[in-house]
Length: 104
Image (cartoon, rainbow, N blue to C red; front, side, top):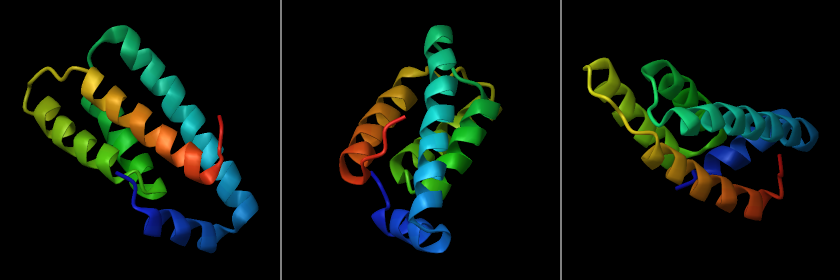
């Protein structure tokens, strides 16, 4: 679900304080974006692309994989329901916050 090696590498690259800021910003942006998506019920290719990139940077591997699959489906003209992405994000976020202690 989470690539903890990526999380640790990012923390080592930017330092503990900056990592805390980056993680909090990531969670805040995703919470806001996915809140809008939840209201709409479907998700766009552009939103999936944004989430995929952000998830890869922070090690949210399962979310990035799901976003990549759904982005391809969107670009092929298929409607993509938001709930599977939302469910993976909620589960991944909870695991991340539990281990890292970041709360947004």
